[in-house]
Amino acid sequence: MQQSFDLDEGKLPKEFGMGCLIIKGAHLWPLSHVVWDGTAKAVGATYFCDLEAPWDSTNLLRIEVYKLPQAKGLLAEQLKWYTRDRKKRRIKIADGELFDTSMLHVKGLTEQWEPDAFPLSKSEIIRVYTGPKHAVIFRFLSRSGTLLDHPVFKRAARNIRFDLTQWVADVPDIIDTRPKRKRSTETPLTEEQKAELGKTLRATMKRLKLSKIKGTPARLKIVEQEITAARKDKTLTHDEKVDLAIELGSIAGQSFCKELEWEWCNVTGKDQSEAYCVCSPDRGLAIYPVDWIFELITDKKRPLNCILTFNMIEAGRLPPLRPHSYSRIG
Image (cartoon, rainbow, N blue to C red; front, top):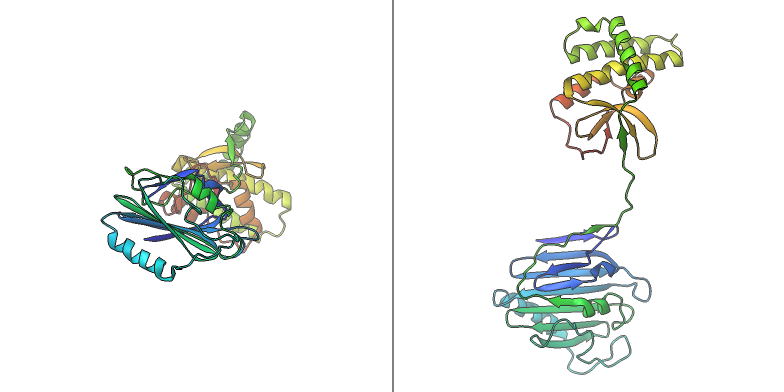
């Protein structure tokens, strides 16, 4: 099956297999993308170049590897296509030189390979190597610029080797070249934070008579009722809303810890800001309960989702997230 992959934010590995070939130094090839098609008897790849002038038009390197005799028919069909416009006379290539069969010779394919080479035009050279059990076709195409000093072509001709004991049909692993993002980190609550949290929890539990309420959904229903009342109370000041968010956020956060084995901790985000929150055991999820409740109090258009969020997490209805990603919900 043909696969295409973009290399705007990636590159090929330093060394990888392609059929019986060993491709070395491809991490230095300036490429835009690669199209790959690999099977048990033939592997083909087109490497599209990403170059500045004079090679800024269509530039590509096509490599096809065939296992013989299994792919004999495929090879014959492809050679028929490539040789249909084969010139009978010597022509000048884009470099200004008359073509000869040593041009862009792949040095790693030694005397046990029978070579053939011919130009299809001033901008295109075909090289064919046939061995006892394999055959390889190289297509060097440069619609603009020269061929012999082409940044990709000359590296490929110099650095490709073979290993007749291997057959690799799978796409090579692409190396991610995107800048690494800063990761979130965590620290435990300080003793002072633990004491303050415990004090707030005890006072709020007493005020809302939550010790008599059994079950987390039922307690979170009380939290939502308090939020609804606060939304309607036009006399509440900003500071009073913050205090209420601390109280209700402590109850909501502790509910997740008690029922879902979450933990309170301080998280330093990728922007280096720090806040305390409750995190899932694998740290894939994080809820900042005070911020969450404050936003629910002050934004009347936001649906009250305390119970819904708890139920979805408890039922495992959220998509899997990368551990230690601290993905914010709520």
